[in-house]
Amino acid sequence: MNCLTVAMGKGRIANQAIALLEEAGILFSDFTNKSRKLIFMDDSNSIKLIFVKAVDVPTYVERGAADIGVIGKDVLLEDPKDVYELLDLVIGKCKLSVAGYPETKLNELTQLTVASKYPKIAKLHFEQKGIRTNIIELNGSVELAPLIGLADCIVDIVETGTTLEENGLVVIEDVAEVSARLIVNKASFAIKTDRIQKFIADVKTGLEVYS
Image 1: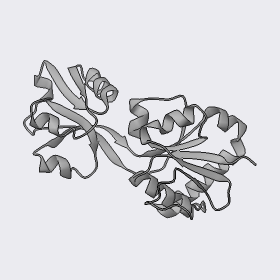
Image 2 (image 1 turned 120 degrees about the vertical axis):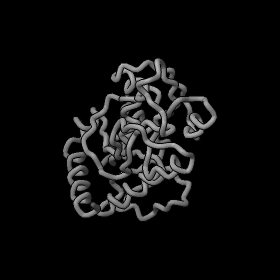
Image 3 (image 1 turned 120 degrees about the horizontal axis):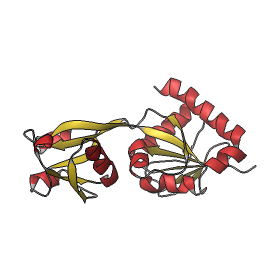
Image 4 (image 1 turned 30 degrees about the horizontal axis):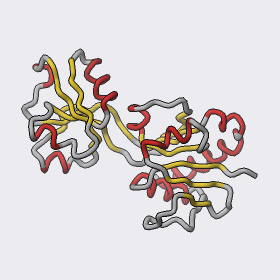
């Protein structure tokens, strides 16, 4: 019997997802945070877990290299893929927010320079508000951009807000609620319907315990 392949990115969400799967009775006894292995089999040898770069998870699922993926909603919003989004796992919860100096008045600027690792989300958010933008795509230390005058504000993931506070920045407005989602390859869902539905049912049971 071919196994189900589940893709996720290593890190905090993966650790929570594996704990959630354990509550669902899906155990990966060989998994440890320190392991450099990229592929793990569950204890029943029916589910293969593969670790890829988080932003690549939807691509693996869309192209059928994985049947199922666990990924943050922010990634799906920034780069939508042709997959089914079937379940909110209610882990990795945070917000995608606009942040900047407390005195920043977004509506008073004729054109806003925005730094973000989410250029599409940022552009769409401000377009919907009728604000013209110049988007600067950055992949790290986005908070630095307003501090050195590179941007008027940023659009980024906010969990605790500590990094913003330590750098004199505040959340100006929220863009979206973010949490980990379970996505499924469309062909896999048609071919392996029963197995995928059982997997989802088990995860839902685990969610009741985990939450």
